Image (cartoon, rainbow, N blue to C red; front, side, top):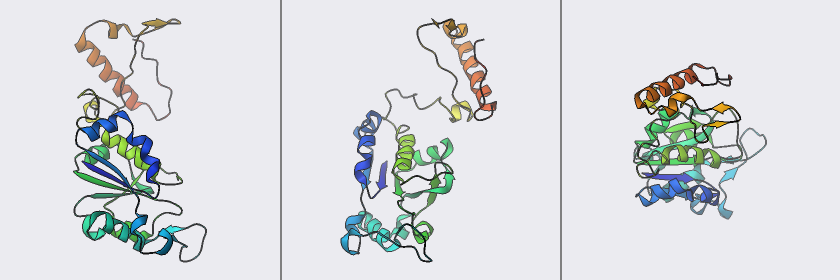
Length: 235
């Protein structure tokens, strides 16, 4: 996969690109790039934004600057680019990121994430240059870089070669293997601490019963309301 993040602050992704699973993915042949569109702007002083029509505070990312940026990066009209790869704008009011969407993106050969800044994108960028509008939730960030790292992390960790164990990204929260339920609880040594014991079934060595117990715990977590206090799984 080629995963590009179009951002006015490409250095902000240096930490993310240095994480082990991301480095593993890159070494396995995938690409993760952070690209600044400003060198391609037709405006003086590397300008990419302007005041909004109709008045109001803040600045808006210009459609002509982003057309030039995407054209300069990919060598095609941005309208045609959407036929070649998934181009995703990170906005507060888009499709909320979930594991189903992540699995869709993992299957793509190429993804571009557009990071907003200031008051956001000129609406014509969203109408004509993107295939998807994606949100992390109903709140506003200063820019799209953090959202881009969340999306990229969720995608990259599922790519072949990213994680040390082939099954590490399989049976986990909201995955198809768990029918979309949260992941079951995990325990490690010591087996007892301050009187808090690990469920005996996990120490039984009976893998079939352990698998059934884990699936039941996952199902119970899925039935619990968000934010509800879960019953301690000590049976």
